[in-house]
Length: 84
Image 1 (cartoon, one colour):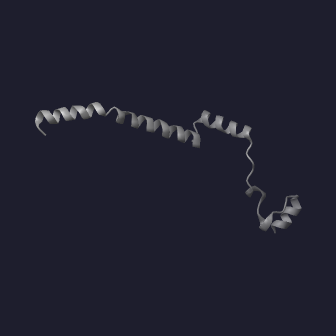
Image 2 (cartoon, rainbow, N blue to C red):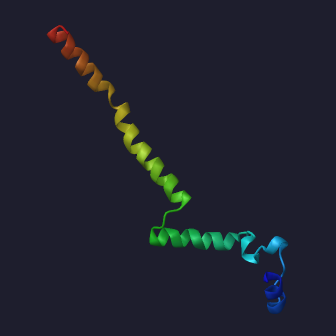
Image 3 (tube, one colour):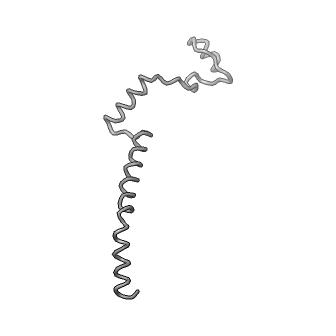
């Protein structure tokens, strides 16, 4: 049935009735750039934006950990003062 349809409409006949849409297209760099710009403009989620969000979150939550050293010295002084 698909073979007859392909012949009727002048479409290429694929292996085992595969549709021509199933084959992956080679991406055009210009199209990729347009998609990236559109995603930025409308705030769409892409792999690049996800990576940037994860990096920003990691920076936000790892920065206070480095500042924890003065607090540790305060706790040590307090423990010495109260004999703990």
